[in-house]
Length: 85
Figure (cartoon, rainbow, N blue to C red):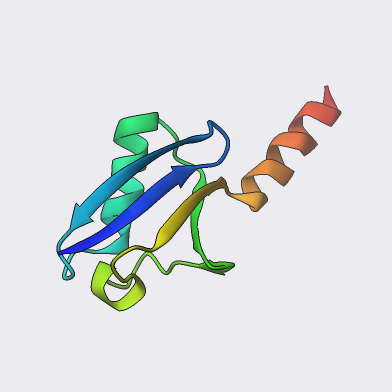
């Protein structure tokens, strides 16, 4: 089990999580979608993007902080759509 903190920076809220090391990073993304309803996100640890195809054990260690940020490519698309109106 890997214990880490998941922080949603747009909502200034965090939760502590325990996940098996063999779980996919994608499972964290699915948790974010279920818990906060956010889908267009990236997960960041120490200024590095987490790879959704790797496992929790490969990417994280006990005590890590994982930040949830909006996917910058989706922000650009949203801003472009707003400016077209």
